[in-house]
Length: 487
Image (cartoon, rainbow, N blue to C red; front, side, top):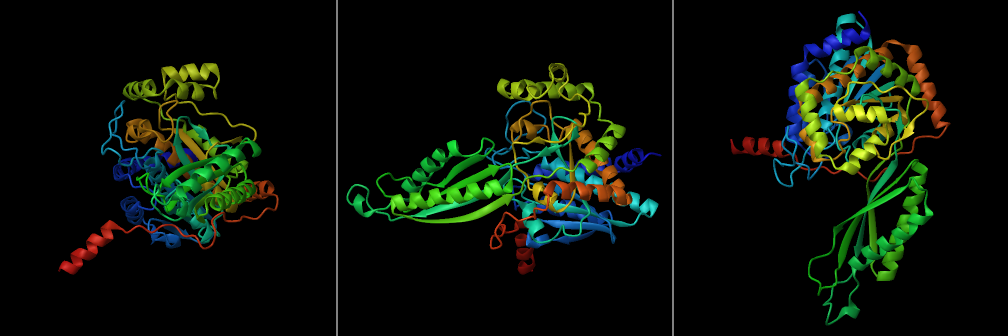
């Protein structure tokens, strides 16, 4: 029996276990660093499957590492389970209908991502148990991918230092290996402190922190002509200092996200943005403070592992949607704004785009390409890829042209086709992980690919040593403590 066939059999044995877990995580819809129920659900499931689990990995309440086996090689499966704020949506609909208005939802499909990676880890464990293969398989429960840089903190703590290869995936609108690079990013909160006075009676005595925020915005906007085209600087005002116009605002905060193709480019832009903030403080007579809240490195692809993963995806073959699944996907497709459809179609051949309009879940595996393409987004998988040969795939869990971070993603998150596409990814990941576990030549080739692309440049964690992830209170732990106290 081929490895791909064996792995498919192992995953299918526990299909219901995995799909039910994914749907539960979808229902929890917990945002970054608050994924207490999601992390515990997956950790308990892995313990039941024979893994040893280390909770609160790297000192992060919702991070964990589950291990099976011992010794080298060590193969990692990376899973995520954080949702997005403001994207609550009922499942299975083709129109916007939130479960809780303003609530959170899995707008990036991380309920599928984490459980699909878990399915792969369990399949690798079962294969090792049946065949006696040596080594270690680990599932890394990674919180806060969405602007929280959970993996970056985990990488900084040394959790990946002994790993030989890392395998993961991401839900999407097509089937294929992710031959991409990503943007490095740094997210920074700037706080300005001024002096509050009566804006009519004594304005000359006040110093407006809100003025500083506005001046900073003007300064950063003037930077845009003088930075590389691929760089991006986004911002959101977090605190305007109050709602009374006749009071000079004594404090105000703004959050900036700085992106560029390479980490050194982000560092250079960050220094310039800080200078603009200092200038805004000088002009407004205020004081400026800043703190880095998250950062990620650019993604390093790995051709050696990509070829192996593509071969397994081809041997397993994409899931074929049934009529009901195609009908739902077409209704979702109809709900997508036309500019989004045109943008998605512009990246494909005319023939492929027309076929996807008729069947937005077209079961076709994208071919391998030479090299990689830039992805105009960021991911903390990038930090792992600097340390460990890393490979990713994507499967069509969503209808063609579905925009990321949308209610349409949330709505499709529990569909039968999303389940099938999730398990397809899990099978491809498991087969790739097992081949890396068994083949020292593959591991050597993957390491050479990484070293060639890094060209001697060392990994520098983009998050300062004195910055730590937030530690929200665990409501379940509080309730348990209160129950014990009551007795």
